[in-house]
Structure formats: structure tokens, C-alpha cells
Length: 509
Image 1 (cartoon, helix red, strand yellow):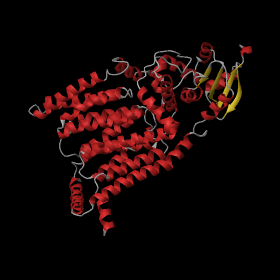
Image 2: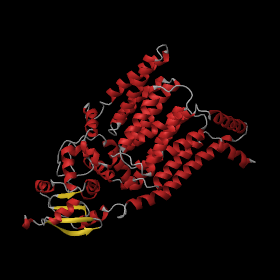
Image 3: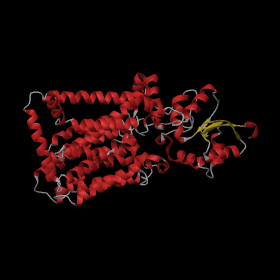
Image 4: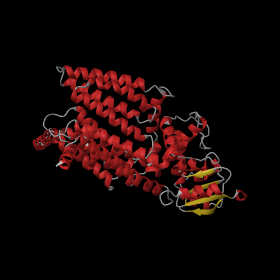
């Protein structure tokens, strides 16, 4: 009988769905094909944190490449990079992998809480959040963009509470969050855009449709002051107001079309199809809802979904917006009565258990079991994930770096765009790279010139002459690598896995 009481108390515990979602996110991230520490950009972030730790200062110019040596580098993510290196020093790559999984899990947990604002029953909100958020797991890597996912979820949750629950004072937290956000990632701009979208939508609704609603006028006023305060808060960083300009410059770079995260979604893949299904569920719920949808509820998710289809990097923001608004519309559908019946049965069970002597023991059991399961999942999956990420099959640059450390070369090295981050981590300061994933540092003309040459464009000869490389470490199948060998000016000294080490024959110049 006592076991039965504890079991029923456990099943009625309000936090159980949240725990299930959190555990699902952690396990899926650590045990799935999420990039983790195999993400090429992870290593230049880690290298930056190491540089800051060793020098005690934020670099004022680029220290890692010979092509941009000393050039101005807007380092908008340095606190996160410093943190990532500190975690690495304590727990290695495994620590950063766990950190990334936990940040993503918390982001999804907050999104679930946003859905719960509209769904009385916890498990439909759990199922909706778990199913719709699957594509987000592919973005889980220990990089600063994770902080933007987390803070976007927080921003949206607070805005939904202010809009639908009338809790306007809660928006006072937005400028405080913005100070943190602007110093962690350039994605703070989407927080400003989200707030501006709510402000514009509510202003239109109040001015044209609900002029007699006092609460609407107050919400518009509070949103306006919050937006102004967030703009001012975004100035609190080492670059000042310039920080607002830099993300816009990066977004406007034409070479983004050559970068994977800026490419349109491919609906032939499974995860984009899941997102498309989520969008379809939102549209169906929108059409069959009870009552009117306002401008914010329609324009915001549609705009973010369009952005996601245009560039994969926007997908998580669309998902985190679609989930709570789909929940809002679903709560007004005909199935609401069925959900309310389920809620009634759930409440009856909770009330019955509340009369028992030991409901707290059931809750304590859930808390303890949750912590145990997360610890076990981390202990089992993290070593496997790190070991998988740091194999030459997943990261062929490991063999390349091992060889160059044992057999160092002198002079200018040409490397591929995606390889620069790991080569910085392994070879700096003895060797400086030509290019890496910091597209905002290298700018349009430089990166465009590189990609044109790398793909065998007409500029490949002038590109090589201009930079006067002494050797190159390139994927063997890269057109430029093959052209360099065919030119007779370079020969392949060694094939290292999938890469070719090319040395320049100066006597043939």
C-alpha cells in the first residue's frame, strides 16, 4: 500500500512532465548525432578562451591568422569563450558537452513552460514540445549561440506572460537580461527584434481594434519603455553602441550563401520535415481556433518560419515561437473539452493523493530519480560522445595536427575554411592559419575570394600568387588542391587521411 501511494504521488507530481522533457533533451543531445565537440567552430571559441586566460586580456586584434594579423576583431562572445575554456580545464571536452546539453535542455524546458501557459493538461504540452523541438537538437554544440536560444526562450516566456496574463511588471527583467545577452552572443539582436514585434503588434491591435481596452494601452506603453531600456542596455559592453552595428554587418554579408548554417532548409531531410509538420499543425490550429487571432500571433511565427526556411540558423527561433502559439490555438479547439475532462481526472487523482500522509515522499522520489537519471545518462553517454567526436573518422584533422606537431613546417600555411578552428587549437602559436570560421573578421571580399579559388574559380592562380603560400593542408578532393598539384608549383608530400599536405617547390617558381 505504501509503495502504491508513493507511485501515485509520483505520477501526479506537476514537475514530472518537465523532468521527462529535460531528460529526453539531455539523452537525445548526448547520444544523438548532434555536432557536440566535433563542431569546427567550437575549437576557435575554445582557443579564444585559452588566449584570454593566458594573457589576462581580451585580444584587441586578431592573433590567430597571418592573413588578418592584428586586424580589428569585434569580440562579442568573450565571456562565454572564457567560460568554455575554464570548463575545459576542469572537465575537458566532456564538461563542455554536458554544459551544451544542459543549456539546450533548459531552453526547451522554458519553451514547455510557455506552452503550459495555454494548456491546462501537462502531457499534451510535453508531447507537443518534445516532438516539435527535435530539429533543435542538431544545433547543440558548445558555442555561444546556445545562450541566444536560452535567452530567446526567456524573453518570449516573459512577453507571453505580459500579453496573456497581464503581468506587465515582469518585463522589467528584459533590460537586465539584455545586458547579459549582448555580452554573450550577437544574437541579442533577435531579442530586440522579438520585443519590437510584440510592441508593433500590440500597438496595431490597440490603436485599430481595441482603443477602449485600458490594459492594451498599458501593455503598449510598458513594451515601448522596455524596448527603449533594452536598446540602452545593449550599449553596456566593451564595444559600446558599435555592438549593435556589427551583427547587422555580418547578416548582410553576401558570402553567407556559401556557409552551411545560412543555406535554406532541405526538405528532403528528416528534421526539416518535422519542422514543416510543426508549422502545418500551427496553421491548422490557427484556422480552426475559437476566437480571433491577433497580428502578433500570426505575423511573428509566420515571419520566423519564413526566416527558417531561408536560412537554417533561424530554425530554433521559429520552433520556440511556434510551440506556445500552437498550444494557445489548440487549447481553443474542439478537443478542449476532452483535455478538460482529462484535467478533471488528473485533479481528482491529485486531490485524492493530497489527502494521504506521504505525497512529499513521492515528489522527493521524483526529484532524486531525475537527478540520478541525468547523472547516469551523462556518465554513460558523454564519454561515448567525446570519444566518437575525437576520432579521425569524425574529425580527420586530428591526424593532420598530430603529423604537423611531430613534423612542423615553416612559412605560410593555406588551410580550408572549416579546418581553421581546430588547427588554431592544436598548432597556435607556432603556426598561424590562413582562414577559419570567423567570417565576420575576414569580411566579404576576403572570404569570397577564398571560396572562389577553393572551388577552382578563375582567380585561383592570382590567389596563390598574392598570398605566396609555402605549404597547404587541404582536403584532397578540393578543386584548388588538385589545381595546385597540376600547376607543378606544389607537390603532395603526404596524404594524411582525407587531407593532402602540399609543399611548394620554390625552384620551379
